[in-house]
Image (cartoon, rainbow, N blue to C red):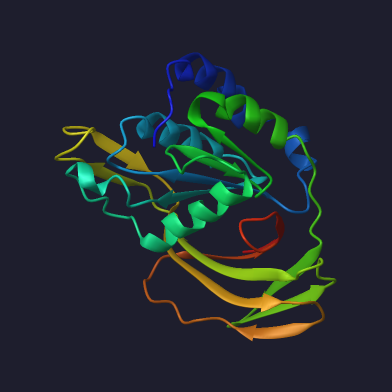
Length: 234
């Protein structure tokens, strides 16, 4: 379930340059930000370095970086304090989408278009984040409602509610592969809910009430079964 990250140190250093983009580069930020999802676990020995890669991406204005904690490492003796089964289900959809043999951590998924293990993440991110994305589904928050419009792809699109904690969290692990380590996790997803399946046209959709204070809300339009991200509303 984990992949080798022996080359991560050098690759991580190479990626640092991506974080400090000049103002001119920021001015060319795409209309749709890139979505980087990290599937990670507090009980996974290879995950702390990947957590830091994701943390570095949070300084970019053209990236939304999210931490999805999965629960399948809990058997090693440490129960991940942020993991939920629906996050593992989301990763399993990407496994099928990218025709992987198994789910694993740490895994980066970029815009629902590509995926990478930690060792190859710097190169994959550098390539993917150069693309300029334009939303094909238009999403807009209007109070407690979501307004969606545009032309749906064949097969429609799923609309997802994501709520994450923008505050960093330090977690001291008392058992398992990371026993004794204090992990720093950022943009930890706390809620994931499929709102509806959308087949095109203008719609107003009521958003669920917040169940936890201080969270940031995102709405994603995504082709079904772990497909591409078609639009984002903050």
